[in-house]
Image 1 (cartoon, helix red, strand yellow):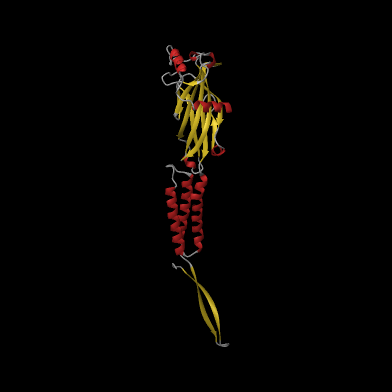
Image 2: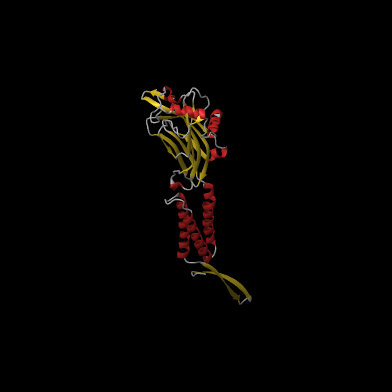
Length: 314
């Protein structure tokens, strides 16, 4: 793994400048070289019961991931290797980058997302070509919107050949930090696909503090206000309804109906139900009247307590 990483770093530091001797050798080779013709080196082919295929080994190096507004920022380096026997230069020893005026054969590939930068190096003694494709972009992720705020997001990076070549992932290195690994899980696609699947959870603790906890406190206030006077009951219930409506309108990252909408609507219906009860049932207030009964024989007044109820708003 360390050797592979060092090779990538060294290759990325290479510039398009090559020596005059290397340029002369390439000029001589490319007089009869056709980039449209695929290399025919036997090491490029693999055979199975389905036939013989042009196989391209692939190395994937995941450098970084970062969650950005329910999408995922990726930094990936994809290395592909094949042998072009027509570009064996016995006089040269060191690997060098291919200049833009001499384009060798490349497999026709579809990258999703698109490649940010790409360059190719050549090992002249063996004719080994290494293609380095760098992807630094933000990938749009898919999710089930109705699960908000407990949804999970899935993002995919894939490389698909347009021809009959096959891509075989021989090595995958996750070079991210421990924090990034904890936040985002990555899975390698099954053969013959050449893909990476990223899965991460939404930030539900933020929704817990900004929506669930306030709504619980609001409904609790309405419930405990039922032991107060009628005016206080109605004022608290109306204030709770307005607060829940504001939360319902502001907490909508999706156009579809979500679990958050269901929760806030249930709280709103509960508050409305309590208001209807307060307005429908008559107000009851206990009034105590003190009457005095005078005992003529003992000349002593005995207080008598009589309880009456009033059915009007007090």
